[in-house]
Image 1 (cartoon, one colour):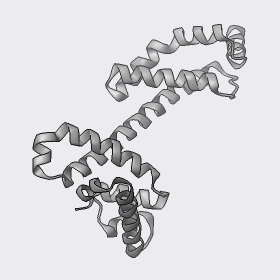
Image 2 (tube, rainbow, N blue to C red):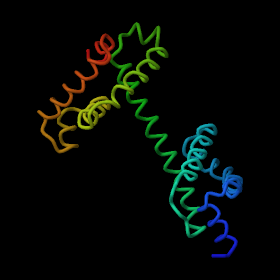
Image 3 (cartoon, one colour):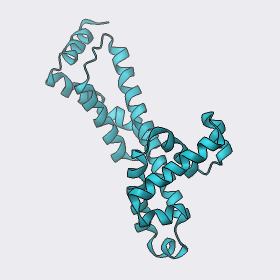
Image 4 (tube, one colour):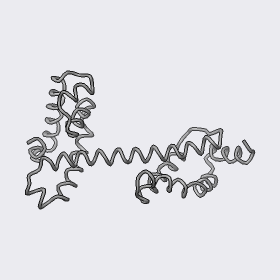
Length: 184
């Protein structure tokens, strides 16, 4: 590796602000273009790339190879994009589940309002579920049958039913009247 690259990495490892500014200017545009290929939105791509640079700044990791460091940046952006898409897909699953269970009048008159409310409340409450309940609930929301969920997690159908019951009770306790829309 050329001495210039070694020196630059040493400055990055030492958390030198000027080196990070140079690094940002060197890679930012390319990483945003790369991220847009995944997320299809420039603003989101910019957010992902900025998050990678912030994480890099906070990281304690030391880098010894410029080629490996460059690959790390691109891999971090790719992972950030995939995490964003996964989160976006999960939000869509929760929204779709809520909308399927809402009344026709609410769907016609308040589609956007219901969707936003569903996303906000269900997603927040579902994140609080114990892991086993949450995993079973997510599969239920995705439309899986008890037998499929049991096979997926290698648990009994009775355990699936029990976890679903606990999840619905958990949600009912936290959402009150809104739970009637979810569980009916």
